Image (cartoon, rainbow, N blue to C red; front, top):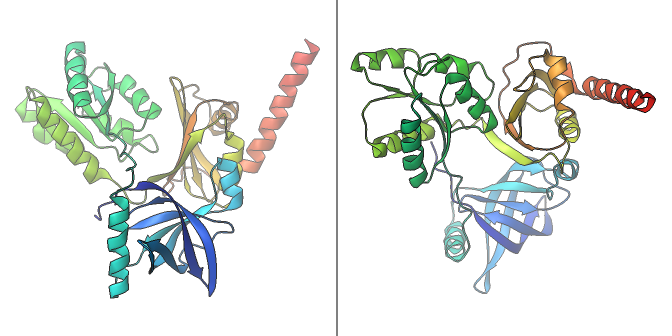
Length: 352
């Protein structure tokens, strides 16, 4: 798998050439493999371009390809500037090599965008073990959520997507072996790698048979668990599943996000979190095909109506292939139905 280049904050005016036209644009961030360019109107994905910059008193240019486009409408709905993501083409000329070398010199002087720390959910019935593992993982730069039973593990994973889950074989309610299936039933969590801790060496093979990504025998040193968490997290990275947008619901309401997804007939998953509550919506070609929430056990329509009431919290939009389970629910219909329900509530309050 290709290693992702480190990205750097940058505010630099550059020239972009496409379809025989020259545009003066601005960079938002930059890496050795590509950049995000602020511009409107945007260019279509797949469009070949040339990007030119002034380095140390001379202009250098290199070919690139548009790999992501955020148009005006989507940008307004999400509170972000419109623009395009570009990937630099592999160098074929000496001038291309000079361009990349110049970027290396430029980036050496720029502040790096810090990588997101590894987030790990740890489940164990012993609070003493939880405290020790939480401390050791924290010292290694990880963020940690702890749980004393299987349901708490699932709740923690829904509140914040983990990079790895570490569970004891004898975890109450849902044990370590059952956790693979339990998480796999929740959209968005099926690819999260699970490490099972066990005191019985005879259960090592059994854990792998159940689908555990790794197994560690107790007792173990914390450094071993940290290394295993990083290893399984890297191995589980899926190019097709990636967070493409995130923000606050107070700034961009859920209806605006859903309208954008319907208009663009997008596939993906919306993860919502508000305090200890968590929820998700799965979409296929702009239609809601599945949904769930820690706040309600209602059917698809009921869950969606409940989530449309959320006015605070944060969201993530994940690009992924849908796991279609039903004919789905039209977003337009859902918004109209929610508006009707809201009007009826307001009328009842007025009458009271």
